[in-house]
Amino acid sequence: MSNERLRAAMTAGGWTCATLAAKTEVDPKSVERWVNQGRVPRRATAVRVAEVLGENVHALWPALRQARAARAVSPELVALYDQRADVPVSRFTDLFAQAREHIDVLVYAAVFLHEAYPRLNDLLRERAAEGCSIRIALGDADSENVRQRGEEERFGHGIESRCRLALMHYRPLVGVPGVEIRTHGTALYNSLYRADDQLLVNAHVWGANAFASPVWHLRRSGDGGVFDTYAQSFDAVWATATPAQEE
Image (cartoon, rainbow, N blue to C red; front, side):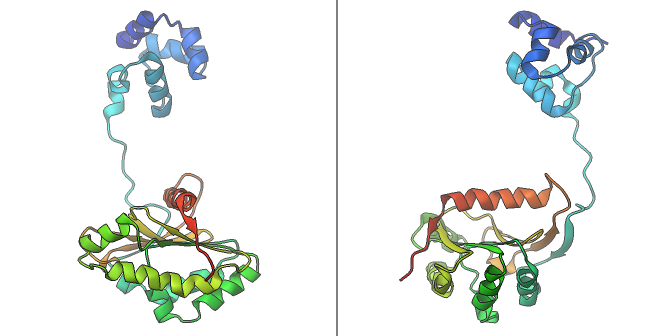
């Protein structure tokens, strides 16, 4: 069955199979099959074609409205914890100790790490000395988003004080080769703790403290997975953050 809606859109815009194929970087024979045989392109290609034609992608290919089959479990999911309080602090520190290339931490405060493991700075210095790149992004205590989070969690000014305390804990690492400490004022949807290809994601739930919110442990299994989504999120926040200064 031919795709008359696609044919009409091409005609209205003065597109031939050859010119549309060149514009969207596909084989002209593929365009011919879309028009004459009603074939449906891959979603990304269909979206690109619809943008060129100025049409709604679902109007051109209604079949793309069908939901994709969901996987029961992501292959990258190692473990799921009901709340962060269920995760032993040793889980965090063991991952950091095993890291060889990257340690990334994105939080507002997370002072529980230093409180439960006073050697954290020493551990990070040791990892940096072995060539591991370490990036710590802490909440800017003076930012509007930190203040708002305090209200949402019914923590009041406590979270702002904990952000300042966290910076105090990490400040001795400012200037240590291989270690960068920055502060950020973004709306934090998840706290992230990365060690090479493993990642602990502490989801943030409106009205609940981070320690009472779930954590999932991910292990990267390939490009474009859930792990990479969070890693890219870290990079985006890091690019907005301000380097901490030595006192």
